[in-house]
Amino acid sequence: MDEPTSTFSLLGLTFTWTTVISTLLAMTVVVLLAVFLTRKVAIRPSRGQNVIEYVLDFVRGILGDQLPNNLARQFGLYSFTLFLFLVVSNEMGLLLQVKTASDVTLIKSPTADPLIAFSLAIMSLMLAHATGVKTLGLGGYLKNMFLKPYAAMFPLNVVEQVTNFLTLALRLFGNIFAGELMLNLLASMAFSLNGFGWIIALPLEMAWQAFSLLIGGIQAYVFVMLTAVFTAQLSGEE
Amino acid sequence: MAQTLLMTKAMPLGDMVFIIVAFLLLMVILKNVAYGPLTKVLDQRADKINKDLDEAEQKNQDAASLVEQRQKELSDSKNQASQMITVAKKSAKEQSDALIQAANTQVAGMRQSAQEDAAQMKDDAMNTAKKDVADLSVTIASKLIQKELSADDQRALIDAYLAELGQQ
Image (cartoon, rainbow over all chains, first blue to last red; front, side, top):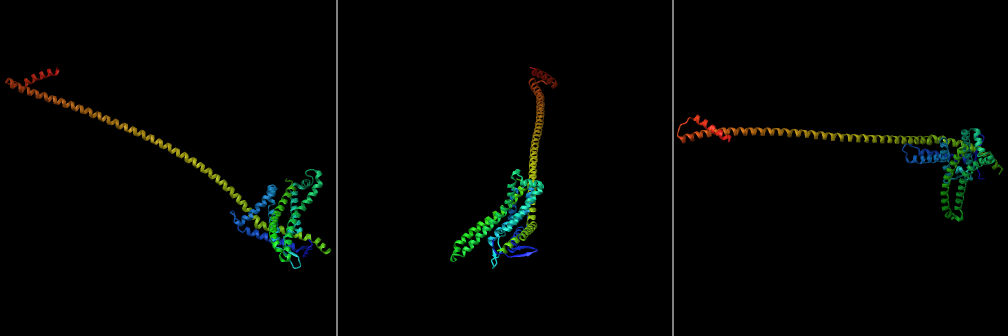
């Protein structure tokens, strides 16, 4: 966390190069992937279309399990985008990490940055709360959030809302950050032990990368699912 | 250290705004590139499948009613055929009966005319024989008695004798 960073200012706001570059790279990959897989969209799907249709179906499945039909349809695009972005973001750091000579990271998994994880969590929860207000009205929404199942639960409910936010963000960040940290440690181990460290480090690195691939997919799934769960809770659908 | 702390304090807002705006942009792009076309095609596919299923059901029903119709036609034509056979048998029998009857009539007519002919011939033969016997008798008698009798008288005598014979 104390890594050196490189920032720039625009319109009075400060931006971090790592965040900007990594996020843009991940999004570019998502867009290229989407364009490539949907070149020829037809009723009889081609191979590429099958892949992205499977992803869409998977996301729809997550939503369908948690939300009523109309909400599931409204959240389709958001969850689809979120899932693709998270998968690409989570796996990106496994393949590509770029640092400048002065040890400033330019490219890594965007989701290994707590700020990005928090931003995504804030965005998801804002959407969930907005959906709650829209579905139940402001009074119903507040009552549903704080006074259920009975009024005495109020303090616990307040705590729950805070922990919801923290766990959503920290689970994503923690998993991906820890994964990358381990990869970096293993990589530095490869250069130790008089140059023979790689004999131990290489198989470990491979195993850890495989595990991180799995973790990255699971975390993308969990984030999308929890967004749907919170939305369902906040709009009184349980 | 104080510098870094200050920087990390200053960082969040800009990055957050950037991420959220970039994400919304990504959503718009994906909607146009992938999500929109895909959902459209998925809906079209669902529609097509529904339509095809309905059509298949309709065709099945049509086929079933066609089979029923064919069955009915088949049994109709069977009935018709057996009726025709019955009629044909009946008319054939009538015809053969008529033929047999005609043949019987003809045979009876022929037999009667043959009997009549035979009777006629018998009468003729009898008459001729009578005449010959009479003549012969006359000749014999004239030879026997050496007396010239009138042929007519002799004949009358013979006839009377023969009539007497016939009565016995």
